[in-house]
Image 1 (cartoon, rainbow, N blue to C red):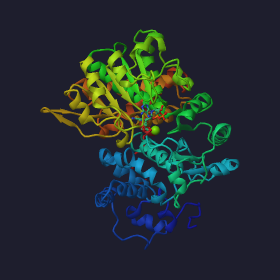
Image 2: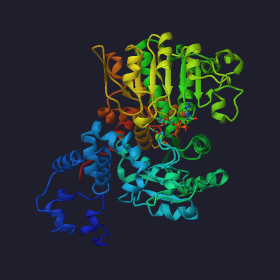
Image 3: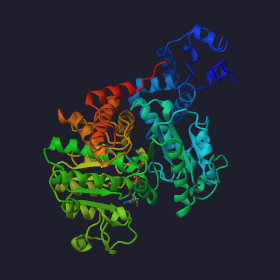
Image 4: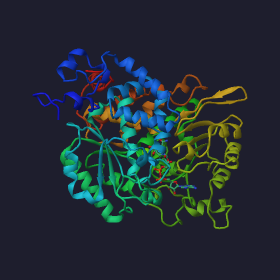
Length: 553
Ligand SMILES: NC(=O)C1=CN([C@@H]2O[C@H](COP(=O)(O)OP(=O)(O)OC[C@H]3O[C@@H](n4cnc5c(N)ncnc54)[C@H](O)[C@@H]3O)[C@@H](O)[C@H]2O)C=CC1
Ligand SMILES: CC(=O)C(=O)O
Ligand SMILES: [Mg+2]
């Protein structure tokens, strides 16, 4: 390796170190000092000039996937330049590094694989996890996002290709949340895959084996979590895109053991709650007066439902009364107590069959979403089923019959999995619907009015959660911290001042939003005694000091 006496990289090795590489921005003095003479073209550029070139190169790509590949390659070459490009054009870049394009990138991860990033931990190497963690290129690790690739967005099991998700989420920790990229680490726990297409793909980069299950699976995850605790006892560990049978049990198992959370359950709950709180405020109707229906009673659905129940209880309802106002419809209809095979977290959200017995219009007695619309008259409908197009015209028209301003959030990702497209929702409700989606959608013009579509995605929450935790030194992630993030987000809604504005601030403001979320989260962490207490001024200063901006040292 080319290095100085102090061990720091020089020469060509420095140019291949993305965290340190400045490319054509190395000054003449630096080129001399670090053995770079002749390795770079002579003209010394500024970061802004480099960013212009990178932006032009990006525009020359024909497809979104090619743009994603280009951006990932830039990230693996020069992180400061990558983040400067992303931050300068955040609204345009976010869909390329995150949903929807990251979905295609995960599906084709093996085909588009170029450079290593993060850590791959395959099941057969489970006895060597300590050693694998020692190989992380970062000296200090403060935030990890881990997946096992089993429920990638609404695209199902992508095996090791799921690695695209921790990489994308951590890019937003930095681009939105200002977390120094050098302290972040994406990890895939490769427990195999049951995706036959992946297993049959000669280019598949993962462990070519069906998924391990049951106790073996939970032991594998435990070996990983214990190794993480040994190596980085104070790290923030975010679980992402785990399948339903594992997501909630893992959260319950580890939430009191280390600083950890599940973004699909808790981050999603907070963003949906924040968006709904804004909607309730502009309608001047508290959440407790709404009837809420869900399509998809999985990790995200149950996470959001529990958060909304907590809000209704805060507003004065009893827990039992709040639950009566929530209707969870899954694959086999409305959840009720005569249904078999429900997970414990779903059982908390089911209705008594006898209370709803007369609702069914099906021969098998199941109660569909349409039945719920006809009988419960929900004013809020949330889609987290991972299936595209399930909010059909008859369902939406039925909903609109019984409520003045239907609130409809097709939150499933990527775009192909949205339960409905905003244009249809606006048409079918004669312009009355308040719509927010998980992936980005354009505004809809209807009868001379423009309806802006908020992107209710946990990206409004998790970067701020990360920043708030790291800046405050929080050691645990509590439900209260998510509630604080939801309320902070709701307060930032542009629709509070202008009813025609979208329910959430635009993605272009995500950095300021993340700071506000971080502040609320940090204050709450202190209140609950999971972070050392300081003054709010001190917290503000810490958040500012912690906030990394792309610039060369
Ligand atoms: N907007 C956002 O920030 C977020 C969106 N999501 C999206 O939500 C979706 C679900 O995620 P999870 O809850 O984690 O997955 P999950 O697998 O835990 O839950 C999905 C549920 O939908 C049900 N389902 C499937 N087909 C159905 C049908 N035809 N009718 C009714 N229910 C059906 C499944 O049985 C399952 O219970 C994904 O597409 C994901 O991308 C998840 C997290 C955040
Ligand atoms: C946004 C997100 O976390 C998901 O779709 O899974
Ligand atoms: Mg997710």
